[in-house]
Image (cartoon, rainbow, N blue to C red):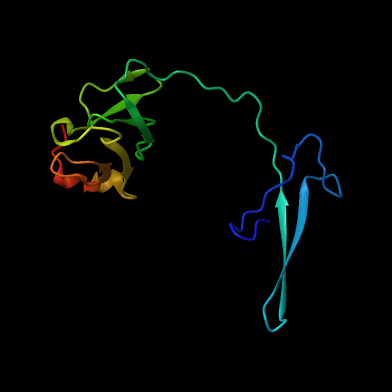
Length: 159
């Protein structure tokens, strides 16, 4: 354990097929002890279980020909669609199963986004109630100043 970051890390990455724990069952028992300046001591036992990673994980191309895609987020509506944020100010909706984009963009703010340097439309987050309220938030740099803003969807006109 790193006492500054409080991160717990294995010295060597655990291997599910070849467990290195005492019982050979991929369960690692760790005991933390903390002592204060008055010499009071507290002990906490923690168990870390290493799970198997499924074989056959694959990555395939979902779309190509995009202009500066910078962020992707699944739409929380059960459709399997993905919002693709492009730095230039456009958010398009990809239907991965079809390998195609919807005809209309979710949002086009290209005239309102500063793309100099590393600026631009940077990300999107959806409301927990997106299905009902259609609210989302964007992180961007407006052309109106040298700032970073978080925009709320009702302030934007959806295309």
